[in-house]
Image (cartoon, rainbow, N blue to C red; front, side, top):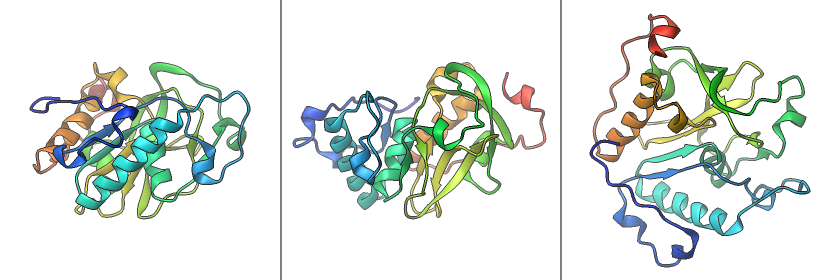
Length: 216
């Protein structure tokens, strides 16, 4: 992302990392989140990473306190929800049995963006197409979060803080980094970069354009 210098943090740095030295944090995808963190029911043969869970919970707690930007991708979006007291569907296909099983890095899933949300402003359109690489999904929302995006089967695909003027706090269930060839998804990273630099996030003035024009 232009103008930013990324630094990767790993779980063994948890007790020594100085979160105040970061302007923003991006929490990416990975293993499922331990159900014990949200009183869920364990599922056999699910890979979890408790050390990473603790690291990310620490990070979110610190960034919530200092008001700096937080951006979650897939697992990262789920972790934001759990950190704020929300719960997850351990298996989204059990909770949404009419949803087709889809696992692809390609943009094959339609998602509806909520009017008035930051995601809608960033993309400049109501409907986008995204990829799908997740098993878990948001169930009950965490405190001060709203649903910013759902797919056609009502599975939550995006969450935001209710009052974004307070802090950039956004999570998306898909992987926009695999859709870098689409200008609309690059705008999402530019919005995060602007927030990290303390700049105003300018909405896309493209609400009335056709979807395929935006997704080229």
